[in-house]
Length: 310
Image 1 (cartoon, rainbow, N blue to C red):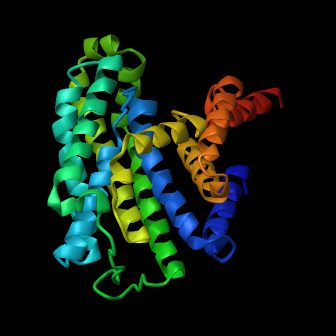
Image 2 (spheres, rainbow, N blue to C red):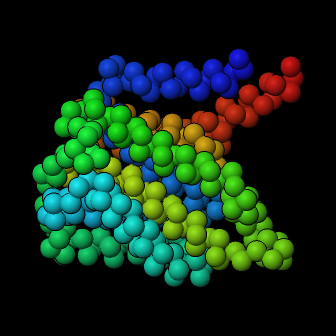
């Protein structure tokens, strides 16, 4: 049995046993943000598109889910589907306009859209304004067959959703579509000269990233029972960038590691108050200076070098 298979089995056993060792709500939040970070990594790490406003998909999906489940009394499954489709549609509209520019101009356009969405969320009645949507009830899944009122049962549902989103991203990256994305990221002019429509591929990557971010946002709203302005704020957009950079851009598991690190700091260092932001800043600076490819990226390079020597 090779080392890779052993590692996968060890991670699987740890994931199944985790809620009986660590507080399950923390794990569920971390998984939601890990999926969000993976969606962002698909856009920046593989398509080379820097978004400063990715929280608009995460947060709006949380609002879509909360409104459909709480106000319209839809089943949870339909609420999640509505949230993902809503985030994908928002990604299609904003992406179609943003990809007309490149580099910092693209990033600033996404930031402008995110600020517009934030302002609309403050004003629109269906979001609850500054109060947000509170008291989103946990309902059984699959028409009552899977109970989710218990944190332990809900953890495995969230884990399955995370694996679904993570698996979809993995498939995208390792498909011909993913290879074209990497070619566009590395040298867009050369990819165009080979006959690929770069804008179409970038728009598709943007929509896919928005949809997976929406899946993460809807799942988080299901876990914590509410959706607030924090979910669509620029601070959340900044956090997902931090998660991806800490773990390692352009790596499969890097954003997952980065998300768990950031969420753990927020939860277990909450007693220091606003100083947690200073600690995050220090860790970010250390990672950028000492681990240029992120934690997972540096470990992967070290392992490859070790295998070459042996």
